[in-house]
Length: 379
Image 1: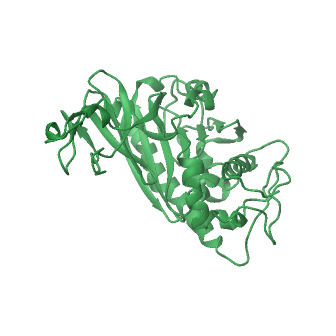
Image 2 (image 1 turned 120 degrees about the horizontal axis):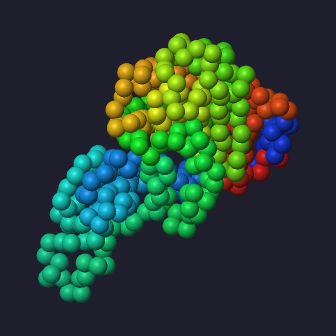
């Protein structure tokens, strides 16, 4: 790795620990293939990743697949009732074991038919009984760290990672404050978006509402913007607002739910965002998954009562998929194009002392975590 690309260069303004005095990350952090590769090891292979929801593996022998960059994984419900995650690769010659989701009696490799149980044990390897010293117990699937958080399945490739609940202390209490029925929600649908922008551009965009009045007219009608505030914590941030004056908004209509609020959103380092909309109980997870230095694959999973979209929740999901997401994607793709301009390298954070709805302090909070994880020197 060329350390020069990470450090302060001629023409760079300082990235300061003080958000009120800081410039943004230089453009190369959103373009450089070197930095993209470094992020795999220093960020994504050491942090918690949203994989799915427990309702997707509610029965024994159910599974679904996921991935973190090139690391293919699957989550499975064992016969013993335990949910586990494994590297999705056969211990024999490295072939992928599973695709998509489903339910099987055993996990059989399509290549040489090695078979595994859902606890990861190798139960059959054809002709291995004729191989001297071969022991099936020497070839289990490699397990991946897994925790369940408010019904969401989180996985981490780092075997030494601290528990999710410890790293994100306080997050569960905040979510339950706005969505006390979170344990009753089930997976309803996944919406997928392919974006021609670096994953950090999308996170930056989520973390501020400075652009909302100009770019999200319907969203501004959904929440009471005078009450919109973003609070940063060690590894996450929350952005919440009170209910609008009317429940018949330009975004979607709703009846007041168990808790009266307009919007609650949470960023979970490094690339998970959690959304709570007003009205009937709901939670959605929008995750920004890097697929190339300047491309991102976004998944938005909707969790609803019984895994069904009522007319009200369908209207909310349709608004998110057809209006708000396209608005944000258009903004982010144009930012990515602008990052290549010889007329741009960095901007200045707009951070006010009262941390109002126009303040970009949460973007700085995220970018500081990126700087620290990469070991960059920009001050």
